[in-house]
Length: 358
Image (cartoon, rainbow, N blue to C red; front, side, top):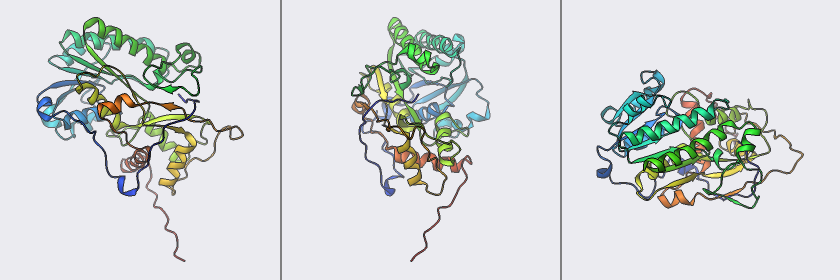
């Protein structure tokens, strides 16, 4: 899902002393508002889902997380979260099984529909649409008041006819035929699932907010790698031989989780919220990695290096900023992604060589 648009917002990068801090949003719901409120998170064990669960627990919610197999060891990290012993339960559910969803949503004030496979399987579109329809229907059946749906910037930015000077925002939609023709079926699935969620929620009288994250980086809570962190790992170790002459959008996973919770807590929050922290060329991304971790054999070769470098496009994340979200600088996210990969044993720890004193 590379994009080849133009111009971007500028964002300050932290100095070394700022790398250990995280801004938690300037406006939060009081603990008394959240206390004892039960919400459900589908796909709770995934990269984004895990952080949504963590954010909710930190705010005092009672959380029910769905998984295909709650007893699987890959979900153990959820039970280790602060507050999980008292306020987290895991239950078995499948988005294609409406009865299992109704059982999971029983008694819930709200639902966070995060679960979604990341693939280009031709069957993904009908499964995503049917699964989303089931989620909205089951949430309404069980009396939930509000649903936050996780879409993707893949439903927004894949439009070859977008003017290079246009600002990417919530009014933009990807070109479905272009996505299908170029075999970006994940984007097709997200578009159709989002449209389905919007129509079904309106028909059932549910309040709906949609979060559209881009390539999501940052520390992982689970032991397994996801697509985006594996992407960083391959660049850091130089196993991805070259970088494309293309730009991409990035956001910190903790910002994505906070975006979901803010969209749930703000009574007036409705519609789409584009969750992008920065847009930059892949060459800038790997340059940042090399600067932070010069001891690693970071990928350096750029494809099409005989052609002009593609320029980043402009975008707006103002709707989320208006909810109180301050985006994490990518430099901090990359630093903490690599440190996390080291700590979990996915990336060998290579000590930085000290320069000899002259």
